[in-house]
Length: 322
Image (cartoon, rainbow, N blue to C red; front, side, top):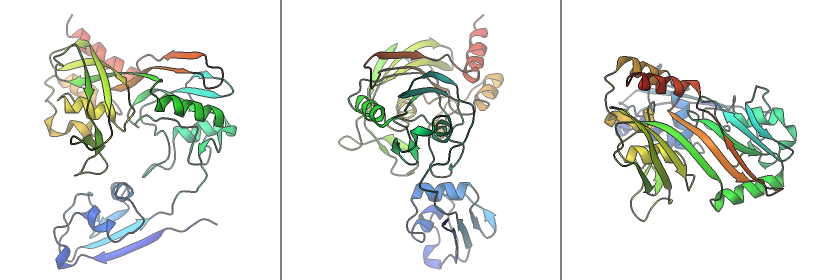
């Protein structure tokens, strides 16, 4: 039997005036994480005096807050048939070119339309491999990132692939476009990453001695006056790692609203600015992937061309030099 959702209504007391909406709700909706509360607010599931508000909204005395909390997602993932761009597949492994805009697995605010559900429809035997809500998922790509991702179709393959990721023997090559001119031709960013202390839905470079070690190697491929094309190799796989590390260098990714922030340079080229707005994500593509087949031991090396959303940006930039 499906579990019902719940509704919440309360007026803001004078002692809570000035509190952030998401923090205030977290104290009144036990069992919901800040991430899920933020997703609930952004989806319109929370109203303040009958109107939608932002998670950072500062509450005022007597404001009426209403929240409709949907029921938790079912334990088992429902298959969702949809086309997949498959680059490699056998009985144990599936490698897909994920489009930007698709979430890897269900999470807060994104219960459907995921790669995991589409893969499960394509290969039903994947059910139960790994976790019930993340069948076959051994690593992930952000919603706004496109490119190569490997899934395990069997439990032995899952164990083998996750072990390779843990010992850093999987090669993951990314191509990205960043703001500004990156000065060094190549370099290594070795900075720990942790949850942002001010905004828990984001990550940030952590203080020394805290966070989890994160290593990104980068190489400049092309430069223009306001943009640089960069190749990145991950030695670790932290959440949002490339986005956080490049922003830390002062070169946030094109299209990255979360980590670009107010510090990102202004784009003077109006056509380029329009192309950036049309990225449907960030200018980041998982272009290369190599791993040892978890059953046969054969080294699998795959490459995936840049999608049109990024190629048209490059075309515009290169035309500007002709």
